[in-house]
Image (cartoon, rainbow, N blue to C red):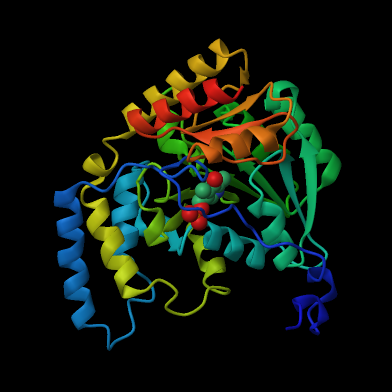
Length: 359
Ligand SMILES: *Cc1c(COP(=O)(O)O)cnc(C)c1O
């Protein structure tokens, strides 16, 4: 058995590790920010019917342009968007990869504000784009001045702002997005990753409101989190129609299977039922923040469905002790912290009780 390191692999990949949140069988899995509620039964039945219709036609390639899915996604987002402004792929990770392929590459630079989503640097590696990390402010907050100064100093080709930010939960004010766009060099794009936007609430406006007149602004979204559809792998993008044309240059033909398109469209036809758990998840998140504070720990502000909390002497040990109690959370490698997703009421209580036991 040889190792990939012994193969004639690209030198710049030889020392890397793949993305690897542990996938373990536990009764309380709060480690990858999924919506832990099941899909409502009537919605599942409708999806199954649509899948059955699609199966009979699997002898043919799917609609390469997935027009009706893009129409449904445009309708879901509103903001005067049409299908010409929408793109989709197998998870927003694939959308981001296509963006890096089209706008990054050798000799180009992507700027992120860390700690942030680990996939940005991994996708940069894979596309041979230089990744520049720029530190966040106090308690991981971003201000317009901090972001604008970093963009001007680093002259990137791609800026990625995660809003709300994973793994810290920090919301990014719409004025910060505006300032980032203003500060862009003329050969750069701004990607706003709104994977958790539905959890942010009305106090945090989506950057889709800024799209008109900003043709180098790209808003990435996903059905994996609030929409409870992580297993289906559907992420999407809202941007100027010219951006969508650029992504067609790098996508694989027929990248969205007929089954994916059918399932996503059927789910979107029930968006209010699919999103019915969001209010409770926000409530459970706030319950966790309160409980963590009462335990003497230091939770960070979160506009998402998860909480990063500090105050742990030995996060790896706490992680293991929680796992021993069948509760899986995430150690993202930020000193003295762990990250936990808000679950159902029962799961959230299990986490709080287990943590109270171990600290
Ligand atoms: C979970 C997550 C995604 C979504 O990934 P998918 O490929 O759509 O499942 C994207 N960005 C961030 C910041 C995430 O946390």
